[in-house]
Image (cartoon, rainbow, N blue to C red; front, side, top):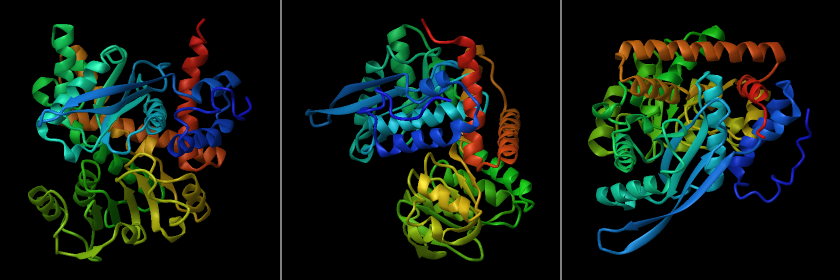
Length: 428
């Protein structure tokens, strides 16, 4: 096995941020158990390509403002890269590099023919009008035309982007190619080649693996007390899926704070309030709590569906869940992982738990390429098969090698990419 000491490339990296270092540290913890060659270790430790662009935006008042945009492609060993586009004030090269790395492992773990990518624009989307968001998206897409493509790199929605964003990206790319190219993005409206069940896929996948984990732990999901951090596209769907499967959702939260009811919340009523008011703010059918308090509630299943760095060395010892399931990317730090493992609290990692979105994105891409579309139940069944198979393989590796579920998931994923890399070799 190759030494994991800093190489010349690693020293002074532009993407050398805390989040990328966390992704790198997870890789370093897992790779000794993967039995792969020194060449594989060295090659997969870094993204293959990182692009920074300046995105000019003409504001509604006529002024012009420049926003930094990014696209990082971690690995093309298994196929074209795949990953979301986010609009957020914290978007950076390092964040995109970390998320692209995790996406590689996620795709490999689910045995999808993709590598990982991630991109975005550093901006406050809430401060932009709908017309400004459209102009920003179209210009960002134009800047990336040489970097993306149906067989090169396929964007998807992420934080503060949605079906409409993908429609603008698809149209901009198509206008420059001279014909409609629906397979350039996934997560777009059904009217232009999107797939049914794509919006719900990530949240539904989270519950699929949570149910599988509970079954493996001899608990079952029905009747279990669940806490869901985040009530957006992932957490909101996860809460509904848990409710429909007979679990008791005792607490949820969003940017406005949390709501707690020991007897169980009315999840459909929570959705109705959030739809009408834009958030859970003002919801009074339960006790209002802070996000910090929510993470420390006693429960059987804690779903982390907000953002990264939620469980840390400072609060992991206060977690009172029997099982943690990561619907968001990177919500548990290295320090928190160690504390939870020592306390015997299993964590279903992000690269497994939230892989439902990219899996149905793959289904969408395949449907667009073939111009042949499947029904909701067929897609849901295909997703359930993929998620169950991936969980069972991870569980088997964890049992065989005495690893945490995160380490086992990374080992399984690294082995998939390593096999392809060894077969292809290095060019030239």
